[in-house]
Length: 401
Ligand code: JHZ
Ligand code: ZN
Image 1 (tube, rainbow, N blue to C red):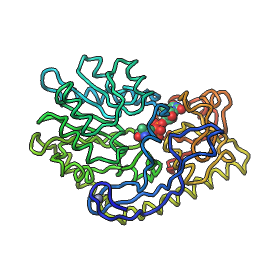
Image 2: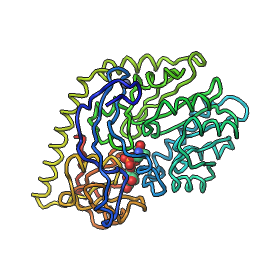
Image 3: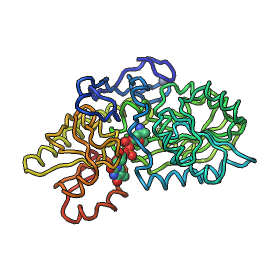
Image 4: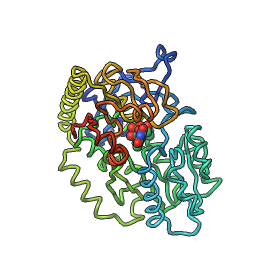
């Protein structure tokens, strides 16, 4: 395959096998025509970008029935308020600033600007979540972002002070198009700020479930510098985040337009110390993924042999990779409880485990809960004291238990 960023020839270092659409929760009459692709990650040792080889057509993933609503976690609502406040305090200096967000989902971040009366615009391709954003007073257009959308926005609103994204940039295969769009959209001293699950954390924790159809890239600072550098941008700041099991916030500006924080040099050096620039790192990651799979299947089989009920907690996108890679179906996990109405009453992609409302968990505790939403552990442990204190056991695939 060719690297999506620098066109170098690269080879996947492993396969997770046949995968369905990670958020493609479905009904039995759709099982027969379910879409599958091969999930094969690759690392480019020229531009240092971690990516997947094949990504399904975006229209199969982002549409008017998109199943992920950001508002389902109160911790994430707090996080996005803090993110918005930080942008406001540090990067919106001028008069009547204008902020644009890519993939603004249900408006969880932009509503914080809307409440302050800041000029803002969300660009969101999934109509149903965009509708929810509008209900929260967030000005939203239903579109994919690129150079064309950027020039239309400039024509209508003028150039932007900040272009933001959260858990979106890593979904977009044509980052060169995004970089061109960002360049057209941003003022001379404007900033491009985004955060995504961090490659360094994924390698450290073997949290391979970050890899699924939507996540075409898992970024490091090294790769982000190489992706946006050729478009005239440089990293001016980096901030580690606790969200999604370990994320990184990248701040970029036109070269020379802003001063560069010491965090940039420090984190780039840390990444080299961790070996994120070396292909050997990904070979040992593959071995740890295989060991993680064997461990999880063994644990679940032991639970079954002991006659214990296992229920999944959180029908995450990430769980699609775990379930399909490990071959875990309803014989090992009775159902998955999830608070998102659009997922309830449906079945998980590929392995077809029923997804049930939270009440199915709360009203009939299983012996063991397999925590697929492990990134929301603090919030969930707080909520589930009764289960834990009553002897309920928690399992995760990342060997933290
Ligand atoms: P959660 C999503 O991934 C999708 P997912 C996306 N592709 C992305 O990039 C990442 O976010 C960053 C439920 N839940 O946040 C709600 C409960 O049932 O780990 C959600 O369905 N009870 C855009 O899907 C799921 O779990 C709870 O108490 O892997 C969590 O999904 C809580 C807190 C959540 O993201
Ligand atoms: Zn490359």
